[in-house]
Length: 276
Ligand SMILES: C[S@@+](CC[C@H](N)C(=O)[O-])C[C@H]1O[C@@H](n2cnc3c(N)ncnc32)[C@H](O)[C@@H]1O
Image 1 (cartoon, rainbow, N blue to C red):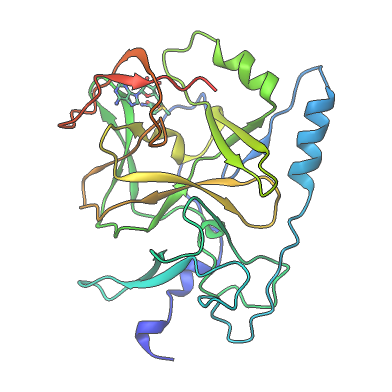
Image 2: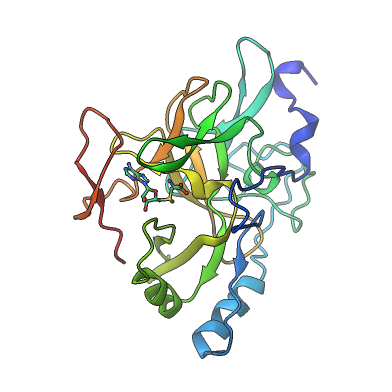
């Protein structure tokens, strides 16, 4: 196998060595279902069942590569070779089958862990740092160059039912972390996934909003019906830059009351209204 087509071995096991600067927040490396103190409602039981249900979509790719049309998960990633270090990493394939969501190979597939359709499942990149951002609290920065399409980290936190999300949404916290991912199923039903890292979450909770962001959130399924919220670079990002995404998800959402301090040329002046 040539150097160009191989991937660094360290990518084939899950690793996340980050921690929160604030001891009051629990570090969790992936989504967890929230534990209600008393109310075990039907919607909570449904969410727990969905979270524990496996998405058994599998591939039987014999080439151990999974980057071609023959892999049922689609040609999601391609190899990027860093020009200065010659290190390789997977980045999104611009001609992948679906633009807003992806499905990675999993424990149910015949391919090995080194196939090229597995990235989010191995955890965040290791060159991130949390730093203070004037007026915005903390923010997430990169210590090295990130190529367009590279995976940053998951936006992980507590998975909530809609009613729990609505309750938390009106809590008067100066910082909001609750994120609602909207998807449309093949049968045209609306699917909403609520993730809240305010009390328990990973490093993804530190990405601030920008009206001209350098990252986006995509829905990524590995082996669960419930998607992970994958944060990916939308452009090449230089070392030292802050990582941001558009809290309105690129849609024309109304604006809220909090001033936006993203300082981009086309700043909309207020943070998006993220009501769902
Ligand atoms: C998901 S948190 C981002 C991380 C947060 N800055 C922290 O210190 O943990 C979202 C909150 O950060 C602040 N924030 C994010 N982007 C901002 C921006 N462009 N301008 C002002 N405040 C921002 C707002 O208070 C928002 O409710």
